[in-house]
Length: 460
Image (tube, rainbow, N blue to C red; front, side, top):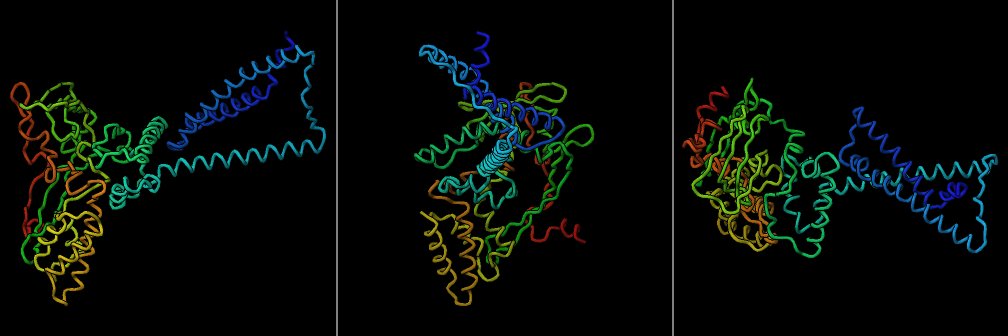
């Protein structure tokens, strides 16, 4: 019996399992030691080190006893037939030819393994590139278009939607599998509902680059809008935003909400646009609950983080007046050549068009009717191209996305934003309400003025 034990490990399955377990075990140990000394390889290397290689290790360990069982059964069959066990082939490294073949086999195997690892790594990297994520054209075209013109245009999708580490990488791929089925079978909703409820917490993604407790203080913001008069006259609004942060021993300003010592939870509807209850835990541990008179049906609890205000940090869809004002300010729309341009441009963008080609034809036709003079042809052509471009990056009839489908909660103009909580209606048991004073977030230094005095003072 003792002589059979070593021979039972001779089965090819056991040998393959032992080799697989040894290689993967040594690799896991090496990567673990490398991580201890400070080496970071990102989510892809983490996926390989803590998911892929351990899985191979387990498979290898399972193959060893499986091979033992198969070998013992084979020996029993041979004994029943009265046959002896065939000896294993002898590999004699004293022979030059054997050494050359062994070294060639080892070298080629190493090259093949490296090529496979490199291809797997690049494949995983490609799967999280903007090009791959946007490959589901009809579904993702709106998001990839918005991403290309956003402040995060050079940030890869995975850095925000997945972040570092292997666990969320696996979750994203499982979710992506169902999304692939939904796209293939046309099961996805139109428009895609927001917010994304299974999104990774902002502290694990946004805060990898942005430091919410850093003291930023106050920032001057100048917004240029244009009137609906004949000259589309510019009007400037000047705000002093209290961005704040951790100044001194306590946080203040807008970013007080995400101070590590402050915890805010709230109950809201599925869209997070109506908030009925706010629970504030101060740095000292004191807890206060503010509630509205009207309850929100089906409200669920959520802990506040960055995306509750910055809900459109990358995939930004603007309103037509914002887009037209920005285009005029940048000189892409010629207000000097085309009277009442701002007013008419907003009307044209708000009109209903069934498709992109219909929008292009409708906008051009209307502009030619408004400005028929030959000397305005160049300005009209430029305006038609610009307005068509504005419409095509904000309105997607196939996905049922139109103006205001995805509003930004950063502020309180296009959506409730700040006023979801700071409306004066959320009160504690003692009657104290969440303040709704404008000065909490900003000071208004000028509003819709042609030449604000504050800007003259700053530029002198």
